[in-house]
Image 1 (cartoon, rainbow, N blue to C red):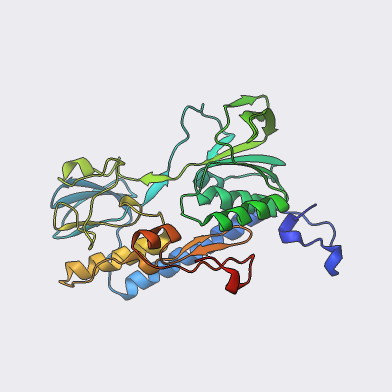
Image 2 (spheres, helix red, strand yellow):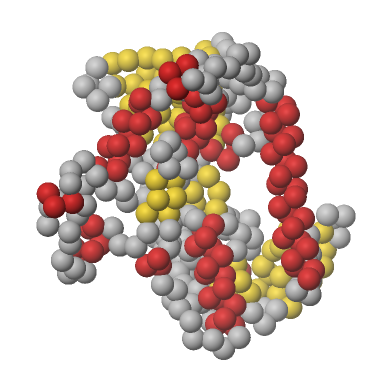
Length: 330
């Protein structure tokens, strides 16, 4: 069973269990109950603060008007003085891969309806979400192969090395030589051809392939082309240090703007934008913005990276966990 269910079976430390299994349907129901509880809590806060909540799909008609298609398909028109765009991001689709019910984006995994866990999966990733997905499935006893280009967050080489080694120690097959050559569906399995880091050809078959190649702004269907705001070359909305777009009364936050795709970043930017609308002078400062990877072990980062600190001219003392502090390098 290896490290199944965070290694509940561990005779070495005196823990003995048997007949452990996962009821996937009950686990999904438990998850949805928690999602509903959290959503209802947020809606309660909205009502408490006398905010009007309209459930529907919004579309920007022009710089001062939007329409909302309600759940009953009726359409309401709204005039606004200020607008905060916060549509979030969507999983970046895999490139040059045929569609299949066995090829999933990272967000689709959360809604996967199965009677039982798959026995083998492959995760193809260039971001830390893929590492989290690989960790979660491995914790549940699924055999995981992780094809990893790099992380979307800047980790120091020693921490990255430790994380990869811990993943391997827990049974994840980590292939960090790049993306596979081909992913082909054959009968009831996905067949993956790839090259190992040593350059050797290899092949595996799995039940599902999960792609996690970062996220992109969710702006294609909201009518953003009807307002005069500038975008970056990558498709993000350009904003100033208060979240203000080139249309000065329109703001954008979260995954729509450049920076890491983090919930805490989006909520922070939303507060800054709200202050700006009310005449405040606060501006964004990401110095103390924490970044967290829910892997085994969990990894967190806050403040400047070593590279950023050196660029800014700071004198550094690097504390290496492998050596005593007095031996750490300058």
